[in-house]
Length: 183
Image (tube, rainbow, N blue to C red):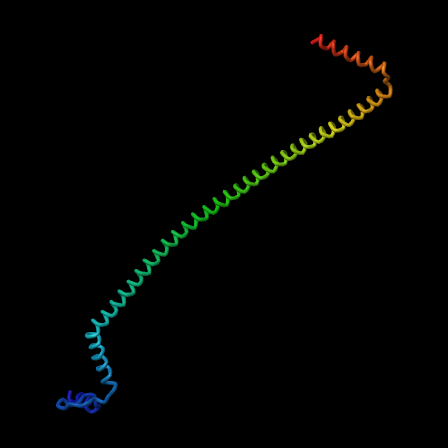
């Protein structure tokens, strides 16, 4: 056993027991130092790291919950907007249909009104034509009557002598007397 100890001492891995010093062998000291540092970090940093991770986890969960709530609110608003859109589209369709029927109704009313007005104008035209015809006929009758009367007077004046004139007067007086008796 002495040989093993001597061999370790001779290689420089183990310092002598009675002295304190630095070990300059990096390969031997690094795993020990790393294990001590990692052990200390794990022991002391476990709580801090756990708290940091828990806080981070809580913030992520809170963000996810807020996002879900916002998503649900957005979905509700979207559904409300779609419902309003459907309602507005239905009203627009109704207004469009009512507008078209109102336009058709107004068109028919206008056509009927124009037809009635045309009939009235046609009647007025016919009445005016009839009135003008009657007026012209009356003027022609008066002119014919006047000409006939003038012709008859001219003929009477040229053909009548005193004796014929007296006989005509007495005949007319006789006719008037007979008429009085009839009444």
